[in-house]
Image 1 (tube, helix red, strand yellow):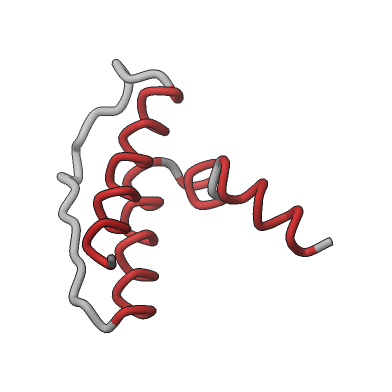
Image 2 (cartoon, rainbow, N blue to C red):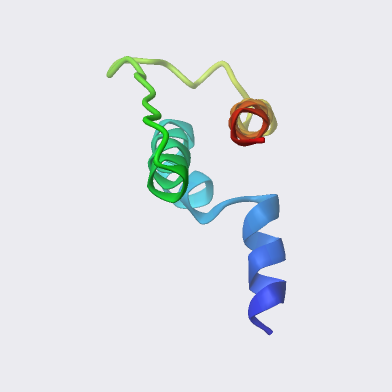
Length: 74
């Protein structure tokens, strides 16, 4: 049943759900660097305002960064 949780987490990652976009992006980079040995960093301005963006828009930004990271890994 662990694979079901992995699929669900892949749809909306826990970091995104609980901590928001900036922390989810940081985790994405940290995990990538840890797994591949490739230095990956992201800088998000401390006062970056997410209010005008819907959760769906934020998730799409997350997916774009995730796919770019996957392309680098390939």
